[in-house]
Image 1 (cartoon, rainbow, N blue to C red):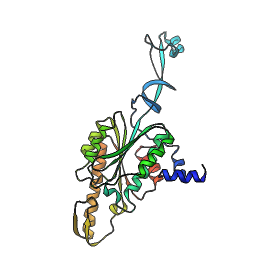
Image 2 (cartoon, one colour):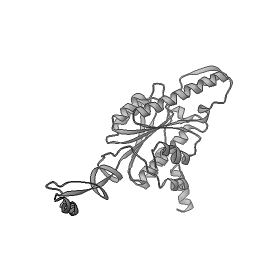
Image 3 (cartoon, rainbow, N blue to C red):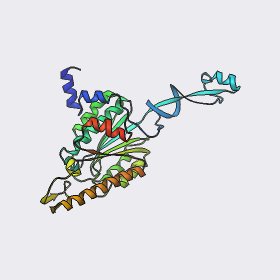
Image 4 (tube, rainbow, N blue to C red):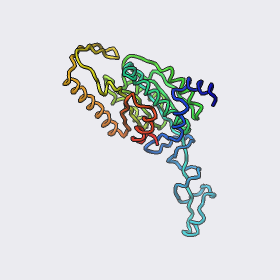
Length: 302
């Protein structure tokens, strides 16, 4: 790639070539095989015609006689077929919370959400999975269905450059909206701070009903995780739900940390109960550290 091509590509995609090269050897994992029916490079639970041997089964009239194992017949005097692994593609759905709270923090949480979505989309596409990428606010406000193959990353880049920003969060409604566009088994990855006034539980249960594996990637900023303020403040809700005058002391900070720990632990426990993956991502974490360390720890990539 020439310098001009590299600059043009960077303008169209959030990650530069040096990072993409580090992602080339990675794969997105699912906990179980899915019978999507679409050819690809991922192992399928259905028998197929790849070169990797899976098992034997009894011959039945109408089976392809070319798959008969004659050595097994010589030993057992019964006809058995050699069954091979099929390969398929699945749809990986990436959902980014674009409500106002995601644009807060230093650095802003939306920046890491965008980079992680770009990295996961790139990995999925180069492995010939298909990708749906969507933006959540109080609904599924926009989405794009992307074809398989590495060249499709430019469509992802264009979508990420035009993410909306809109008011309040309603994760339950936004996730319920996913049923309009998801019709086959797959993996849905949600990138959000999960700071939704009405919760997230109903929406995530609705996504599970769509035969989706789920990964919850919670992004919080350093100043949310470890606030360093004292004195009298007027706090403004980032999503327009009013202001609150507070006098911040050491005991108030301690109570805040306790509430935050309870909130993240509740989300992690909910994920575990519903067979979903969960990881907490500080917004100042380098993208390669997120992908190669934090997401490997929860076995979302390998």
